[in-house]
Length: 137
Image (cartoon, rainbow, N blue to C red):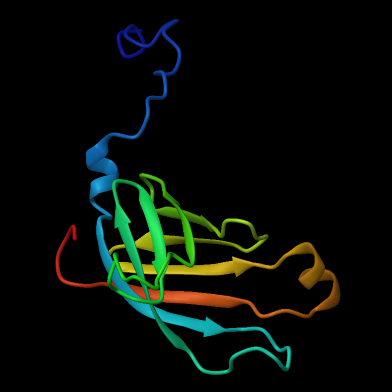
């Protein structure tokens, strides 16, 4: 059994935290659209321009591309995994979104709150964005 000799009894390799290089490949500014999918009368009907800023595994969703704008805070914040999965949430709220990055394209959708899922009310959005330029910003 020469093929198995090196594997016998050693088990799986321990999982280590994500290497910075694995996360750095997603770094950059992604510009796209917040697209309404809710049907409630008070929901916005037109898409809205948004930006995702990703740096070292951290994600910010903003309505302004300027990071230090005096009036802008991130709408949602979250993380990206080395495989490109994104999870976002909004502080002090039940709003959450999940999605992924494939190549230079980012897509995500809000996860309906329990109340919105039960009643069918509420405004939810999906997000489609593309990386601007090339790399970290």
